[in-house]
Amino acid sequence: MATSQSALLLQKQLNELLKHPVEGFSAGLADDNIYEWEIIIIGPPDTLYEGGFFRAKMTFPKEYPLMPPKLKFVSDMWHPNVYPDGEVCISILHPPGEDKYGYEDAGERWRPVHTVETILLSVISMLSSPNDESPANIEAAKEWRENYPAFKKHVQRIVRNAIEIGLPFTTA
Image (cartoon, rainbow, N blue to C red; front, side):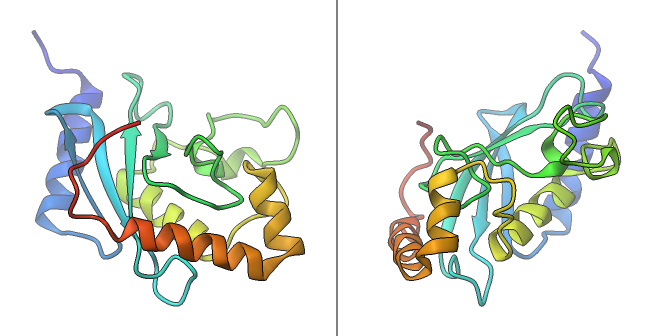
């Protein structure tokens, strides 16, 4: 059976990341499936998430790179741009084209030039600078705006839990 173009591209991106690791995250295959990646994102320095090791799963569609992957935290995450179920909500992970709600410009959304590296660097940036104007987690955004000390305490708790990186990777 012929290997699809998306699988070849993903294998190339994985090989590049293994050859030239990028600070802030690590990535590998889940169960030798090129379309399912296990990710560990290291909480960025000088942020509330500093010191945490956050597990995530990135799932690629067969139409990659024409369509974006989905990224979902497996570790607990309290952030305005992460749905309560762990799914990350950032513009570059939204399907290409016009936003039906008119919030995002088409140029901010998914483009085939994005790679695993650019996606994960965007997520690290998101951890540093939440966008509370268009939240995925309304409660986290509300707490971020209205009760920052409580938000900070909530994040510190998940960071403490996320330090348990030595445990086996499991999905919920």
